[in-house]
Length: 632
Image (cartoon, rainbow, N blue to C red):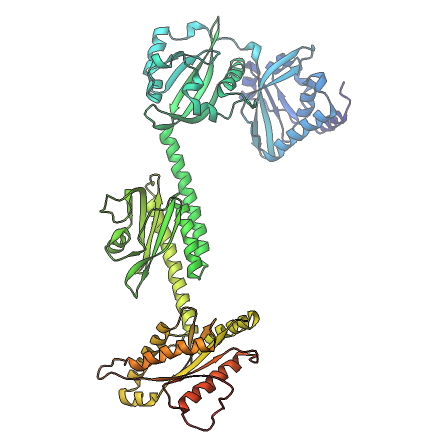
């Protein structure tokens, strides 16, 4: 009946001698019990086939031992299923299990229809187990004949009164329902679980009492469109037939609104006349909460690891701030965040970024000890507030927001800022500690970014005056010059220096002269517009770039600056110092092909201003001739 490729392989396997399972206590036990038992070696060759299995299938051990398991199973399948494709599938499935040692359904009973040697169909419950051996894995199968399962004698049970007492005193919820899913009985444990008395629950549909649990059950049938109740009714005959309990987990809601997580088991209750079903429900909320805390802790550690890698490699302050913000929210599973950075020049906190949904209203600036940010700064400790009101914490008249966790950002006793995370859900006990660890990562990254910013600033600024140095000014000016030429936009440059500054040094000394020079430059910086650029050209000479400005506009702007310098003395320790400056202005024209030409024209205009009296502004034109040889 089975002259096929699989039979050839079985014959080949027979040629390899197989050691029979050594007789011992296990084999004596296995031969005497009513459960069918079979076992294979690492190649899938049957090495044991007990007497109970011989009786169930009518297939003696002498015809089985030494053959491959898939060959034997194929022989026992129904005739309509005996195809080459099914044989190949059986062989591939068995070999995959033996090679990997993995089987998702291990230990789970499933119904399988076989054909006995007399041609009759036999329904067995079969469970498979993978047994590691010194050379790989073996298969161990247990078979149970449904027809031989006997209903436990009612005399073995407790009396009704004793059983009722046990059920009533049980801490778990215990209930009984019929084949239509209607509750027949309901113990005090169920009343505690849901807050519903027995009189209310009896007669109700089970799925209406536990709607979320049955909707969450992963053992339900995949019938599209079926309601949870229909799914339950379809499953009950399978539970009754297999006599095996079905377990599932899911949420439920107490009548007070409190949510719980419950583990439930449904099992058949067979009597002489009918079949009922029981369900035991246990409140697993504390265990579930512990699992959630562990999962949250694992996610937080991974977030800390990722954040540490990301922010430690970023030296740009702006980019770093945008990295810190979302990671802080993710770390505490919050809704929003706020990051304040300390400004040492003004001695206050400035809001660097606020991010998230339903962002609470927070101050843009905070002094030490004022508002929530200022209080964290002053106390130097992390805070966790369960009832946070926006604005000052003492002003409870402002709108309520939710929960807030805050921590100072410090590096080696250097205060850098304050970090907040806001949430509409309660924080867990380890959240504040996690925020402190995150703050330490952020502090190191912020310090490095600020040091990098300071070093970068030093590379492009003049050490005496604080404005751009000559090299960096030329980088900015070259870019602006190309853009102005390309788009035919006006552009002007100004070169100026202080008049008779040697006399200032001789009068007040070089140290005081440097202070006067810095004061004059800061007046210039404060007087020009935001897009304008001021740089040091050399010595007491300075240069100003005026984008989107023609010659006349530049001359008017610089004239106001000249007048302000001449009319307002610079204060000194002894007497006010009156300082004037001469200015040369040049604007872009079609015959100017490069930046140096434009600067040279402004320089010539400056010399002309000095030659004609100093303390004046001159706009370059074709009539201005180069003045050489005069010491100005």
